[in-house]
Image 1 (tube, helix red, strand yellow):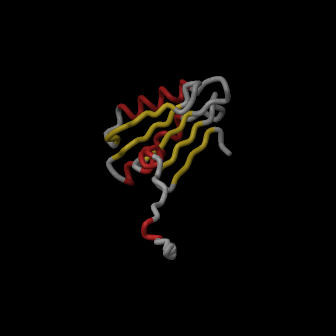
Image 2: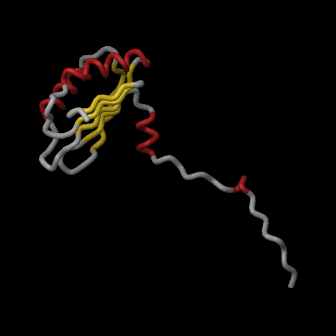
Image 3: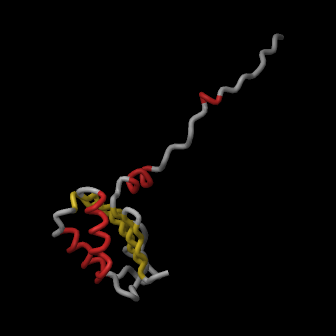
Length: 118
């Protein structure tokens, strides 16, 4: 019986695929997360953010993804560019209560807002 040496080629190896959710989130210029402390999200803040996004000319698209069993969700917002995304984050800031019913985070280009503040 003839034995052949085993040759391993790194070129044949594949890296793990990025999950679809991570790919989608990477396409978001602004991400808004509404969390829960076991009693639901802050619906008042969520309605205020939804109203702002619906009437904002800088917003070109919004995708809502469920993230839990108590109404938690993530908004992926596409804007007309990086400057528009920065403006949007600052427009959302005053809509977030100091003591929300559940944690809320907003991320944009070089900016992150957490309510309640960390």
